[in-house]
Length: 439
Image (cartoon, rainbow, N blue to C red):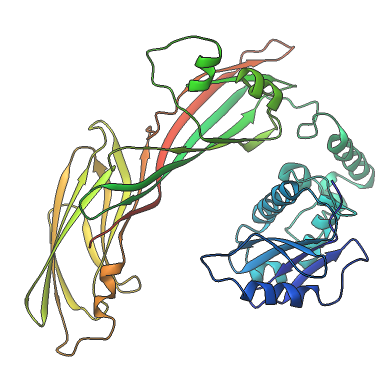
């Protein structure tokens, strides 16, 4: 891979907030050219890679009100650049929690220190959040003071250790880790993105999942993870009565041995210490909606509108959804709401121009009804009918449940000291972009 020429962070007006140039081959007008190129595209035909007549290639990604831009004039590995951009944004989110223009302006020193570590003359280097966190701290917006390491000698010893980690074969885990009780926790989170038509038909549906591990294991443990992966059973020529999953896309933490997975569909790894994302995956699905919402709107007279909402849960009766919020759009000029519902709590969310119907718990295979009445002004506002174009949206969380049927079959831990490790697994399904059309 050829090194990049420069990296830039721009605000939503296209102005440079942070920049680091590694090559002398960039013209002074490159940012102005990039901004002009972006104007040529609208939100429906934007391209993540743009080239100009001067031989510059612009590779960028938007995040909140920021644009992360890499410019190169060489034959650069584009996928490597995108992987770096995503990882660099993840590092900044790890440090600042909320990554936006204000947090970037407040942390110039830290970001430039991070750029010194993650890029060396335009080549990606260390991008692991845990490694970086050991010697770049954000509490005081500067490198950690000597007192954190226990004095000057201790500081030099620790910096040397983490420098060695960064260049070692297992750069993500130091040696000498010890725990009294050896445990590893796996949290399987699935977000369901679903678009449902007004008749209840599913237009689009997919699951975005990730497996977050929290390793509290001593020494250098070697872990083997077994999933109900359809491709694995096909590879070994074994049939099973259990439900299997055909994963569409899978992404692994760098600790996973990719060659082992590609050849044998086995997930083996030496985990980092502490919490990290082990796996992320995407699965297209064809399932019945977890929640079905029917809305009947009547207008008995010009100054009054009546809305009846029926919500039903379609998942198993033994499962329970927590913190369920259903947002039903209403005309922008409604007034004086009156609600009737035996279950849940209903309010008028004026900021979202919607009814918010909330449940602390919504048990599977249950159906509830809510009725509300609004007054309307005699003179209709220009945007009164806009609500018909806005879908119903639902927020929810279902513990101990996965839509896809994802299952951890086993998690084996082997370490040369021979200790017994306790694995724990938890499953949670949440809403992603879950929408239901009303009209």
